[in-house]
Length: 218
Image 1 (tube, one colour):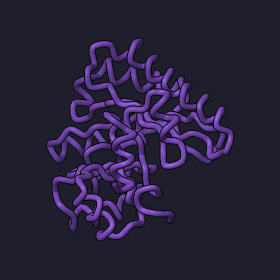
Image 2 (cartoon, rainbow, N blue to C red):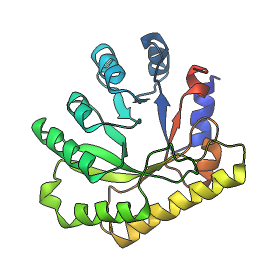
Image 3 (tube, helix red, strand yellow):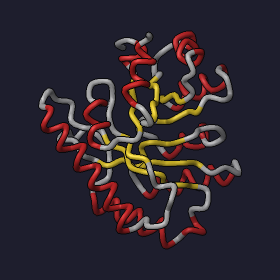
């Protein structure tokens, strides 16, 4: 049984995003032939080039930090943008999605780690976005906020990682119960990577991003 199938068995109903950044077309096609369809990239240029080459039934997930001036390049085909961390970026995604006559799914990225280098919203900024989203539906018709995403601290301290995952789960529940009651598509809690996905699933992740376990180290 392949590593891929072992991971799928462990995940059950949790969605697997295969993080294919820096990996060649051949490696992606190997997983594609095993049945994987959701792939994650963190660079716009690389993802666009791979989209042009690879089968069109692949769901592309932009998982890295996204600059507003790059949104137009992925708007025609991206399935989900994982790292929305400002209203400014949300407005640009709306603009480009409208131009393409598409609706783009997005996740709001929360800052849950102890590392200042990681991007993400704090609770106040999350509330600002949710209030705008729920009170101005006609201005964000081409966007669907479907959940939250966060990255834990890069540490061997497993209890710290677990606390950060629980913090993100609590923020997800707060958003759903306080602002998004009735929004049936707000279902995704994206947390967990190769080193910590098992713990993330235990805490309540619905979507994990796994790269090195599938493709080998970078």
